[in-house]
Image (cartoon, rainbow, N blue to C red; front, top):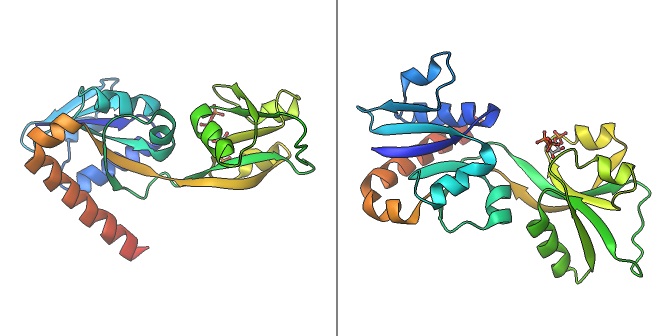
Length: 212
Ligand code: PRP
């Protein structure tokens, strides 16, 4: 049995479709209820619906053998696990954004609001720029509007949230997408099953790419 942590929500639905198409369906998952665990003994899989930012924790600690997490979470928390495959879903980018008229004053410490302090810290360390990180948990775009920060480091998908709040993407830090991840011990002891699943998912991803 492979235990799989799926990110709850829109991305999770798409990710599950991918597992189903690769031959790891679990019909009970379509039942309208609030259960969080679903198993298909015949297919040898058990799914858990997990808060997206928690998937890597379940996998790192071995509560799930594999899972799907955004590259943003993997870069931010640097969990000790294997990244097996880029699923090509949930594509967006990590970016620096701010007001159009923003001009950096190198004489001042730059105030940066973000949900991703580690990513922001590393990016600005690479630029040798001193920053003051303001860690927020959501609605990051508000921070420069209210004078809480000069800039933000955040996920940009369509760019609509920035635009509608009078902000602009200024620099792309890194492209982001959903990744198939595995617990290191599970990968050793369930190696054949996990590699088989990974291969089927990879084949499915390639077919989707070809059609696109
Ligand atoms: C994310 C991100 C941006 C928005 C970007 O927020 O933090 O605010 O999506 O998407 P867009 O470029 O398509 O507009 P999320 O919806 O996760 O909510 P949050 O503000 O509570 O973090």
